[in-house]
Length: 309
Image 1: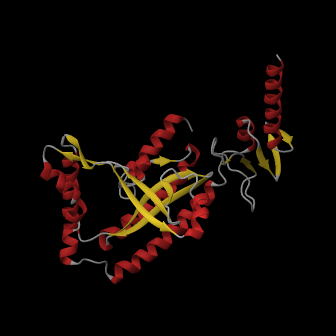
Image 2: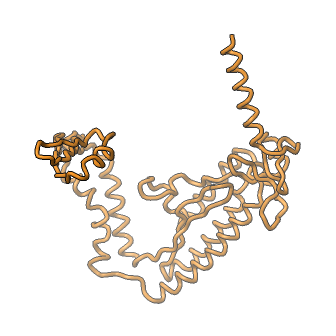
Image 3: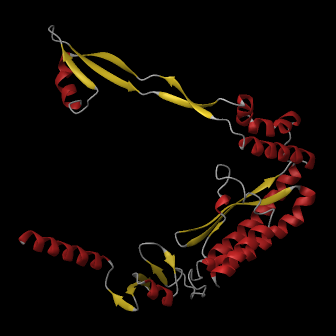
């Protein structure tokens, strides 16, 4: 699969399954799906099959029962596919239309130029606290706070001592708009405005919707686990299927964990595990740590030669 084909397939997966990847174009402050499909090109076919199954379930269940599957993040982690999802129950259509209208309005308000200015909340100041110390604990307190710059032990003439602690409070500031202040306040009330109708009507999912959500979640869990397991046996570079064993693929490169076939592992020129043994560039090696030791010895020899000169 070429890079152009992989890019086209990524776009097709996100655009064809609109309900599943509905959070794709939202900002990173709201979802991790803004990064798109952060996976290897060789796994796109497996993710495409999984997306079609989940989107088909959405088309079957959502129109009548308002239960939908939503992808939260799709990424590659430790050489395996991680597909995070959630099964949500939406309120009635008229309530969703109100929430979408509020969301659209807030996105428009975000683009307004508020012209922020820095305002000082508190000026810096020092807070000093003094505590009396018994005579038998003066020496131990001196040793305990010997390296503390903000603690000072002061001995008095009557044999008592005082521990003087200085707390430095730094200046606090915040950004305040100089234009459209009331619109800026509306932005902070975004979620309370969106949930206004839900709170007024005290909407909650019905018992039937809760039961359907459990069934849908069981369906999604099985298919996601199957896709993640299949990707563990697909080479990340060329997409070739690796022989399945109880312990996973036969080649696992060290340093950065990635599951590769033997050809791709040899091309990477990194030490990898094959049947419990260390290999590198098609040759068997004892341990990858010996290479690091040799590099250290060579560098130390070069340093010694430079010192002698």
